[in-house]
Amino acid sequence: MNMPIAADNKNFIGAQPELTIWTDLKTYLQRISRELSAEVSTYPAPIARCDEQLPKMIEQRNLAMGLLHELAEIDRAGSAPLDERQLALMEAFVRSAEFAREDDSERILRSRVEAALAMAREQN
Image 1 (cartoon, rainbow, N blue to C red):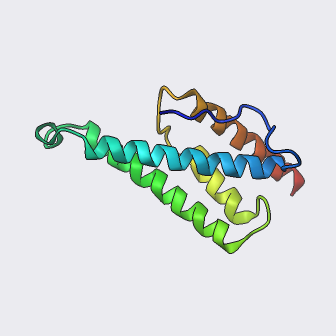
Image 2 (cartoon, helix red, strand yellow; image 1 turned 90 degrees about the vertical axis):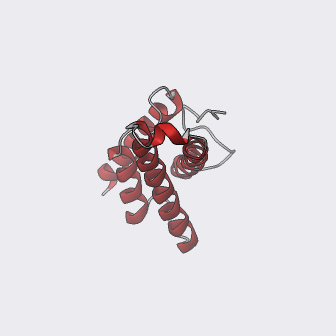
């Protein structure tokens, strides 16, 4: 089930846009990791030996899970909104290949992350 990602910076009352983007990125990576894991685990075995789609799904799942793991590490460190580690992770997400080609929420999120990165660069 695809959960929509907010298309604007509106979130909880008083929340900072950076926090909203970071939370939305985390939520998206959790969802896509679960979806890709489910697809990989239910992929038909006879096809897997000669199919090109399975390795790509595994690669995408590993990338999403890696970004999610790194995001969790950053969260545990308790950094300020959009510090260097967060910006680097957000840049890695934007540079990565799309996880779900038909997922508008991913395109919207990527656009929002790119805008947040541009704003952060302007402030530095």
